[in-house]
Every structure is written in structure tokens, then in C-alpha cells.
Image (tube, rainbow, N blue to C red; front, side):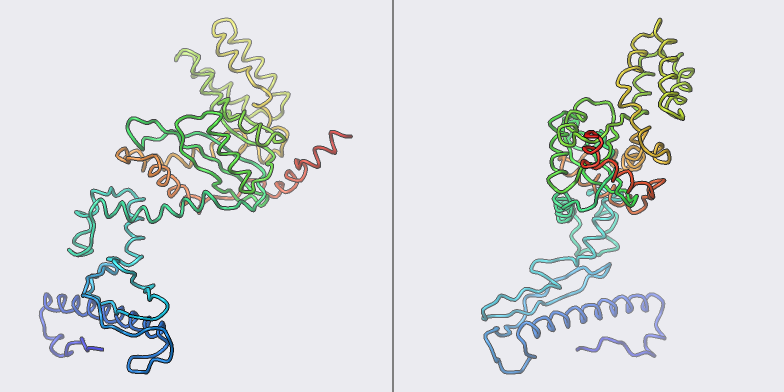
Length: 407
């Protein structure tokens, strides 16, 4: 191996500028030597012999080196010559530096991470050129190709088998300011909590509308991949989602989101009346029993009936779904009243996607949302009262329900 260390006295007596320049050259040379040595060791292992030893099999032989190329490692561009192998039954492929590779995988991972964090594809070159060197490809098309490599993670995730048994599901359609400007897409999201109280992102699909067909495709996919009957689904009031869920999981209970219900009721009142009716609506949502909640609904609906009949009708509508959570343990009520578990996670996601209106495809927008949500799952806490989830799951099992009906 060529020696690259300068003489210590000469380096010690140099100026600051010369020292930094020499230090950079020294680091680049040593990184290059190490990578070159690893590539040669790969060939030795592939051939089963060191350089100069006689061939004992049909593995091939060394045939010099390819033309020198510059490869980026971290912030260091290094000059590399890939060794060539001829002959043999198997073709030699380097795992360290595949053909045409201009960057190591850690550089690609860093570029991808910066894109997720908010750096646009057009800003990579002016932002990182000084750091990564003039030889590193940083054009918008290069960054797009780098990101495309990671899309396979999302595709595999969409096909994964769901082994855990989930007790509660939350589903909602979320509209984002990302994707093609002439297509208003919606993200269909499903989050679940399993018997141990751990929350998990189960599905995220892009669609043109929250139709029954779109939601049916989502729930059917979950069932095919192993998701068994949950105890209950919490969702908004869109009729399409209830029809689709009832077809796929007919035994599960259904709970409408109270926040969506409150918005719908208030939307049918004049602005001057909304503040004084918000309190009574919240009181209904936090009632201590089903009977008390029904009493409060009737009372508020009667007070609205005369002047705001549409608001009263909206409030009375679908009471069975609005009060379904009372059938479950009280520690779970605060989680089951609303789809807040989805809404709260999309607030920071929107801050990133709102600046991505230039994304040209719905697939890119979906993958970005997926990557952002997966990162947030690392900080999710267990459901309150998670110790009761196993019992809920057992009581809501199809066999248990069938025995109750037979009795």
C-alpha cells in the first residue's frame, strides 16, 4: 500500500492553510486506499486465492483494473479503480461498489433523509455542492432517482403480512396539498392498536375520493394480508367507509368521530350561535354514561329544533354509531370518541407536504406521507388502559359473540 503520511516535522511547521489542505488530501488518500484494499479483498475471496497464487479451480482470473472513477463517501470524493475478473463460471459483482455506482449507500440515505426533512430536489446542488465536492451528482433528476430506490420499502410494506391481532382501528381520509395540481387526491389511512396496546400504521393508500370502492379495496387488502376481525372501527361520517367496512368486517362495532359530528352540527348554525353551542356538544361527548349522553342529545336537539332544524337533525342522526364506545372500558373512551390519533399525526405531516405542490405524481406524495408517518410511529405511546385490551379482544371474538347470541 502506498504511503501517504507526510513527514511529521514538515507538517508541524506548515501554516494553517497548508495544514488543512494537507489534512484533507491525507484523509481522502487514506479513505481511497482502504476502499481499494476492500475491493481487492473481495476479488481474493471470490477467486479463492491471493494474487500470485496458482488457479486451483474454475473461478476465473484477474484482468487488471477499470478506468479510475471518483466515488463519494461521506463528504469525501475518492479516486477508485475497480479490479476486473475474467473467465470462470460465475460473474464477479462487487457488493461494496457495484458497476456505475458514483456514491456509497450512506450518501444516498443522507440525500433521501434531507428530502424527507424538506429540502427540495432543486435545492440540493446549491446547498450541498461545497460539502460533497464538484464530482458528486446532485441534479434534480439524480435526487429523484435516489428517492425512487427507497420506494421499494413502501411497496414491500404494502404487501407485508399482518401477524398481530388488533383490537381497535381508526380510519380517515386526509386531503393534502401535494401531488398534481389538477388532481385532488385523498390519503386513506388506517391505524390500529393491538392486544399489547402498541399502535401501528396499517394502511395508507392514495385515491381520488373517499368512495365505498376505494375503502373496500383498503379493507379487503388488510384482510387478505392477515388482519382479523377487530372489536371496533372509529371513523368519520362518510357513508362509503361504513358500507365498505361492514362488508369486510361485519361483526365489528362502529364508532363515528365526535369531532367530525360537532363540526357538521356547528356548520349548520349561524356563526353567532356556534360558540354558545360548542360547550353543550362537548358535554355530550364527555358524558359519563350512554343514557346521560342520549338525554343531553335530546335536550340540545329540542332547543335547536325550532330555528335550526337541520342542526337538530344532524345531531340526532346515527346515534347508535355516535355512542358505540360506551360498550368498551372507560379508560379507552378518550381514544375511541374521535379519530384524533390520525389527525394529530397529520398536522406535522402537512407542514412538509404543503411545500411539495410540485410533486408530479400521487405515488410520490403517498410515499412521502408514508415516510413521514413511519418516522412518527417511533414515538407513539401505548394506549391508555392497554392492560384491558386482551380482555376486550377475547370478548369481541366471533366465537364468543356467537355463543352469546345462541344463549
